Image (cartoon, rainbow, N blue to C red):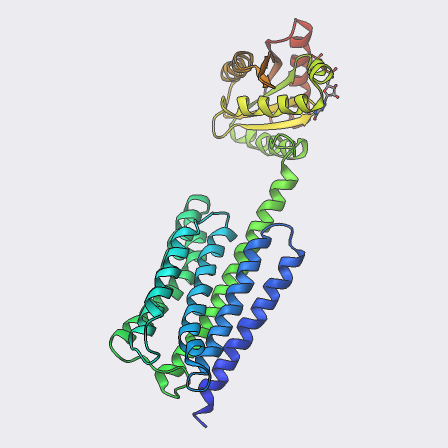
Length: 381
Ligand SMILES: Nc1nc2c(ncn2[C@@H]2O[C@H](COP(=O)(O)OP(=O)(O)OP(=O)(O)O)[C@@H](O)[C@H]2O)c(=O)[nH]1
């Protein structure tokens, strides 16, 4: 009776990993972004299932497959995880260290006899190393982007898996590693741990892929496709939110700007040059702004800049800085400089009842005056 427990657990592990591989492979067909990551995850699960299967065939199948092949499949599976997990959250790990580790593992394992005690030691050293690196890189990447608790929550499953692999390695070094079909308590516990690792890793990865998708979709709905500045709707929402802060005494200013004689760029150099000019403008303006300031494209060649915690004097200074920067940095089109200027209108939020639309209208009126007064200048409301 007890003999069947490890075999049942092995079958459950393989079934789970193969199902996960199929689900990831299916997802790769429908996802538009992160397709490569998801395919790597499918392959990693399938390789791990195959490795367990070959492991179970020791003594029955050819030794080259059930020992050397099984170990190399497990290491390759974790190598794919190392490449795909950080990619799932937007990092780009280099393939070279992973490939180098795979090559070293292959060279060390190749000359070993099947019953060598060092074979599982090398196998689990590689798995621990790969998972340790993955945990560290994921942590480093997430820590910079997420709050501490969320970054820790997402990394803890990876750290748990690393810890379990290290524990297995320690047991092997003490000489207490068991064969995968053994009915010993230690081996049954290990097979449960493998099942737990598979579940935890796949659930964490699914969450990471989903999180990345949501962030990407949010970005697509908030950003202007050409310039990557906020689009009109997102900028308006931000302005309304800032307006709500007014009641707490936190004032802000709005700068609206419009490129001067933009039509001439289109008419003389072509529409592609016009597009390049808009991108150039955004790049130049971003360089002039504080971290808290927000730039939005309101339509055509008209932009808005929201300056939180700013009074009129500060907003005028910021607008003048943007105007001068733009004038000093002409558009370079096919190696030729093309002078580019813009006119600016500044308005400061006055009272809670002064809503976002009213503030935009006042900034727009000031901008209109700047155009009327000869362009390439800043006017205040
Ligand atoms: N290339 C390009 N052109 C655009 C885009 N959006 C709007 N335009 C063009 O921008 C031009 C705006 O021209 P006008 O409104 O006459 O303004 P202007 O030539 O800048 O003149 P002033 O604002 O009075 O200084 C039009 O020719 C639009 O077709 C865009 O995304 N790309």
